[in-house]
Length: 337
Image (cartoon, rainbow, N blue to C red; front, side, top):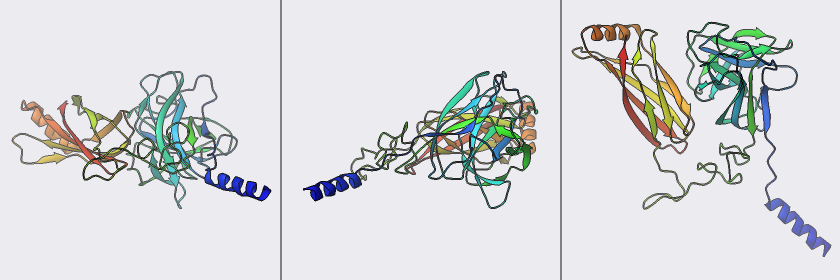
C-alpha cells in the first residue's frame, strides 16, 4: 500500500508543472527627492558597468519585461523611451532588442509604463531621450551620480538603428547609473507574455494574450490568428525647418511598424522618397515615428510653397503582428515652412 501511494504521489508531482519564479525588479531610480535635468535630447544610453545592489542585467532564465518606471524632474513635455541592449563580442557595441516608443513624462513624479518585451539572460537596460535640440542639462534626468564602478555608455545625436542592428555607445559616464527600473516576469511557456500579469494561460503557448487563439472558419486552421492588424494614423501639418516631421501610430495589437514616405511635387518630374523607418509598437499604445527630410527635399518643398502649391507627403504604414499577419494604413502629411 505504501509503495502504491509513493508511485501515485510521483505521478501527480510530475504531471503538475513547477511554479514559475516570482517577478523581479531590474535597475534603480534616482534616490534624490528631486532629480535634476541632465541628459541631452536625442541621446541613447546603456548601463555598461555596475556595482552594488540593483542590477540592470537580465538574470539567467530571461523572461518578459512588463513595465518600466522613471523618476522625472520638474521639466514638462520631456520624452523618454525604454531600450534593451544586448552586448556583442566588441566592447561598447550593442544590439538593439527593442523598447517601444517615446512616452511623455509627467513632471516631478515616478512615471510607470506598461510594455511587453521578451528578453534573454545578459540583456541590459537602457534609455532613449527624445526632445531633439535640447542641450545637456535640459532633457529628461536619465542618469544620476553613483559609486565608482557604475558606468553608463552613451551616444549623442545619431539616429537609432532598427531592432536587431548594432550601435556603438562608447561615451563613458563614470560613476553614473541610469534612472530606470523594469519589472521582469517569468515566461514559463516562452510565448512572450509575462506569466504574472499578461498571461492567463501560463502553461499554454499562444498569441492571444498568452493563450491559444480561437476562432477561424472554413478553410482556416483552428486556433490560428488570421486577423490583419489595424492602426490609427495621426499626421498633422508640420514645418520643415528642423529637417524632421513626425507622425503618431496607434495599433490595435502588438506589431512591427514600417513607415514609407513619398513626396511628389506638382509639375516636377522627380518624386522624393523618405528613408524607411521601422519601430515596434504595443496594442493601443501610441508610437511617435520621426521622418527625416533631406536638404534637397526641403528645398523642393520651399520652392513649391513659393509657387502657391501645397506639398504633401504620402505615407504608407506597414503592420506585421506576431502571427505574421500584415496590414496597411495610408495617409498624407501637409508641409509648411
